[in-house]
Image (cartoon, rainbow, N blue to C red; front, side, top):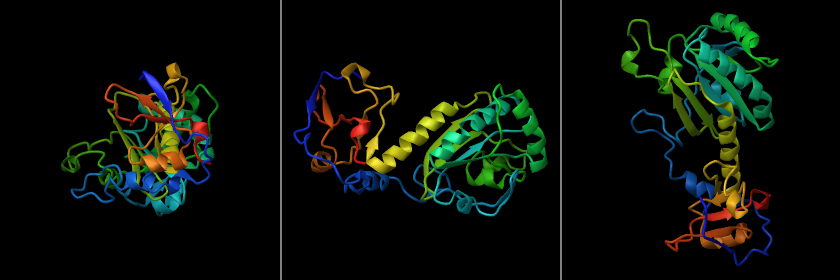
Length: 271
């Protein structure tokens, strides 16, 4: 959104040497607004991601949590092997795999098909992709739908229906504390955009570290006021903490007179 004016923080010349993670009113306070456990069995943001064991194309995964270790993670479900949209999606995941690894984010995909089906289908995925790709991530087999049930990928009342239900196109981004930070649900008819998913990973990691929130269309935001790629301070960050930890932040003037649109250049965040 275009701002009518920008007011530079009075403390703009002061150095910011502490990590924004330590801001008392920052990330930790903001995250506390999201409950860690669900009261009704429906997974929501902030809840702990359910652990599970499973067979995968890379062997037995005894514990999803142990496999994630201290990394961020993505659980990426697809409805079925040998289907057109899923074939292109796994190809796009493969193209982003190295970027994810460089950014400390593991990814595992899942469908209700058995491992031998995954392994046969992956030959089609590699052949169809326009780029030379390798499938370096595990594809989880969930033939009894128990993992899908834990992650609310379909209504449990449908489990015993004829033909058994397929999973939706779901994405769960999970932080190193094993908490769910983002959930995306797509219908079977719409393929996902891996560029957007990677953008979300980058934004979530930055927010966790720096007590900020990314605007709409970030990093292509606020170019008209010379603040392209800037980020907002979290609403929980107090005025005093904003001055101490984010001396380079600027406040966008708006008709209400409320000073809540506090932008900070990404390269000026505490390091």
